[in-house]
Image 1 (cartoon, rainbow, N blue to C red):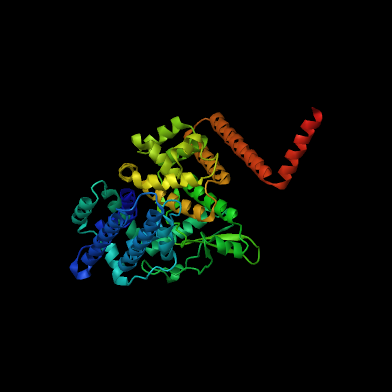
Image 2: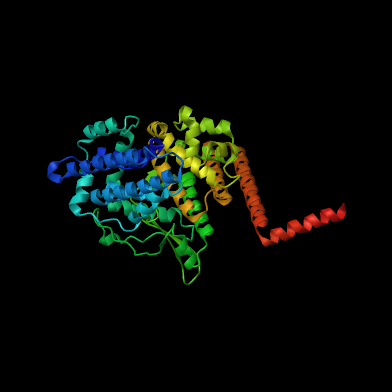
Length: 467
């Protein structure tokens, strides 16, 4: 039906692109009004295209699927042109969309991926305009509200307004780069460009040049002998450590900012983390609730899923919240997200529900703590990378998350305990839980290895011989 396709158009164009026009500085002298006009015109054209192109075609027919793909492609090209024309915030939106392989139609992600590595450059005047953008947002929000009455916008405007100056302060970016490099120094596979402070200012940042293939480029990894599963596993380790243990999170891991390269000397694959302008600092209480929520999700403990989702502001929409966090269906969440990988039918269900539940998603995003917004964006980008590498929902990623959650919660509990016996008890429980995870990981490795097959065959033979 055209209505469902139109909802998808709303999901892509409205929630990700045109929203941010509420944050543009409307001054005819700076041509801000032209940018606003482009956004409104692009949204109108996309909406009209979906409505008219699919209106008279039977839903589910081959002709419908063909026409829908063509409309997706035309709409994606219009969005790309809009992002390139307006630059600034719109480039970042386009980069985000281009990484959502698991959520958006392939026509959108393929078309917008070009923004990861070939984004147009901005002049100094354009950057200064982004920094001072503020006026006019209420008027524009009223216009967009008339076009899409189900959506709420102010939370996104406030976040964009707060984050953009931080991203454009290069001294702040340099400090973030050094902090995360020190924080994750135990990961020898992580490389962060060195900052040359003597040649850097708030507007100029000089750093070490590093190159490699984009982290979602599976073909590049295969050509260079890089293990795709290892890269996906190590990326998960980095972000689990940042989110659950340290509460200091790089929030823009689109493929243009995460590179991979094989070291000629050691043969090891390195992950190169770029663009350190946007980080989210998580409060201790938020981080602990988030840790416990993920522990509940991994264990399929639905009572605790509901409890900690509500504590994080999801309210009665906690099932939707759990699905958004895991990028899995509600049935999979109930069954256990580590039990089985994402199936083709579940993938279709996720994509369909993203459009069908857009008003509820917007309401949820308006209710959760502001810290959660960038984490959800980060989750989206990481899921997109996993989808491109075909490593989504692997057991190893959940094991790494479990380790970090256990360590984080145990460290917090020890810090709140004044009893030496209680701290020792917490440490023992932590060690026991980590040992159980290591044992389970060994079991999974044996199960998937040739040696494991031999052991299983031998045990089966011995059992048959005994009886």
